[in-house]
Image 1 (cartoon, helix red, strand yellow):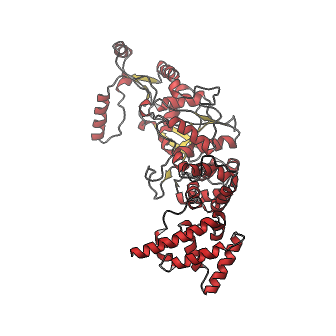
Image 2: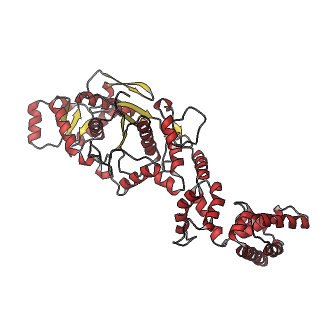
Length: 491
């Protein structure tokens, strides 16, 4: 790179950080880290009507949770602040006035009612709807009279006619727009607040942004931005527009179709390193067979030349698979640090429980590799901490026939004699009992598992029994036998 790379992620605190925004932040972060550059966070908060309380902190927390710390920006500082656009209003006004003074922009006094009427007439005539440039031709005297009368006005860019506006997108190649289809866009609104376009260009220039990496929905705005750079006499940054993300059915992302926030995925039990890995592969791949990669490996391999401009599909089945791979990689200490607060929240354990507890470590060891998400690890541990309140319905119909009551009582009596009470001894006892009864071991194992855990699935039965302990296992087996008898009496 001819100069140090500086990129920015510039969200608006109008909602939580959704997956598309997180992917944009990630690609900027990866590009900066790969080139030894600077990743900047800027908050575009000039639209106060859409500002959501709590959204700002959620954005900060989501970025940090994903492992995307910013080098400059809110709560960090930097030489090009302030990093909130609401604190930079005078800067935008000054630059808008400069464009007007140089003839690159002009004041427009048209009322919303007139603009609406113009739009309706253009729609009726089936021509491109855009401002008809009425105020572009105002004389100085006319303009002065309107200003002296205090007439509300906006500032518009004077878009040139007959221009081919071209830019070389690092992902999509050369893109050309004809200036004749572009509107004289509003730069400064009548309330003195900038539009996105003015604030974006001014900030990117003053913050010395070298590359603008953003979603493909901004492609149509880029020629306007280039004309604005020209009006200021500034060199534009390099642009790269990332592929759109589609829902699993191929449609547009929506709240019902995958456009969840980072916080939603966090609450659903996904690990940050898995979500980061998954997001990186939404439009990019390293060019080899690797799929599960650490952040550092992705940084090393990342390049915009490997980004596919075609739409990427949000495949949550793939995300869950990837999360399972990361769950398996967790150490027992790491897993417990994450799940113990969840167990406390579910009141499986007391507030004073610690990760040093050997029982908790044994439970985590049994369930960690079998859990696709942290919430599964938390929820599926219930029977290790309390008796089953009910039995899996389909399994009970199959395993808890009336004769199973006597079988469970016999097995409970046999289990009481097992010593030492470990999985090897328990398995040996069950194999011997099955042989003596002339049945397969499964005939004994399945009803026992359902009686002890309430479920038909889970870790190895004998390992499970060893952890729970002899007294509780026997008590649960006898309780299940009583339940079977009570159900038989009802029938």
